[in-house]
Length: 94
Image (cartoon, rainbow, N blue to C red):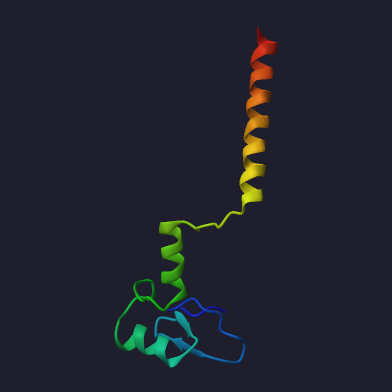
């Protein structure tokens, strides 16, 4: 189960399960999450310390990859190979 506010995993047997009168349930990993959502009326995606905010930041920026020199060489060789195949197909059609 995951926390409704911060989206961290709540291990079985821990945390708090809050049930509203209409039957909807909220699972919280800590009292910090419970207070922020129920008492203060905040949303988890706007708080910097939640996993939801971290996920939104990574979606916007994109995951930055650190590529090694070897990976760049392999990528260049694959691009050359694709270009040669495209030239061969173009030559075969004529």
